[in-house]
Length: 314
Image (cartoon, rainbow, N blue to C red; front, side, top):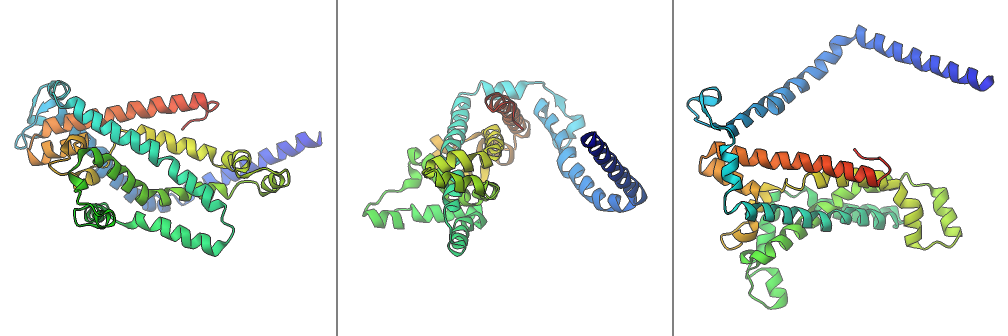
């Protein structure tokens, strides 16, 4: 009886708090409007209204006539892209760059978080974290400039090995350069969320594992991995769902005429067709195709991971 009365009293308290919160919001609704309205207006103007631009993909778009005055052509530009002899090349380059980047880049922040969690000295740990986080604040263009300098014929890499290889002109080296530089730049910063999740790991379980003689891998499996498992699942779903969203700026900045065979991806193709060639309808169709594939991948990966993870997904 006491347990039931306690549950009832807690329910009444929660209901009372909820009602008081609703009453407070009603009394001060002007304050909430003042703070929320600018964000809602900006989101509407810059996020939702531009979505109407996808209509260009189904039109023979004429900038002078506008979207409403341009002629409708249906799926003409989608058929043109899918039947293009370069379609499989651009799609393959995009998928390879994304999938290889996911396979090599996704585990690195997790490994860094586990390694950082083993450091007991707070001072040393903070210094190492500072070094690891610093590359994230380098802009993509500056990073690409650094990569070009290091890998040039007269760069430090060739001086170190006594060679004269221009790595930026080698199609087979582009993916390695792209993925390795991305890991160096972003792995440290991406490890922050895993490091924060590891702080929630039970210290009692860790001490018990040490007393039982568990080695490092057994400690990670039994104590630390459960603390970050949900975070890993969420991040994997998001990254796997963005397989087609390869960074345009970096791919374009590292692109040369000689490595075009592997560096030309859908994003750079859209840029060249839309802004350089002025083929707005075709570039919009290609970009919309890319977005649709991303959405399909996101939903599919989420369902697959949910089935493998006891129904837990996004």
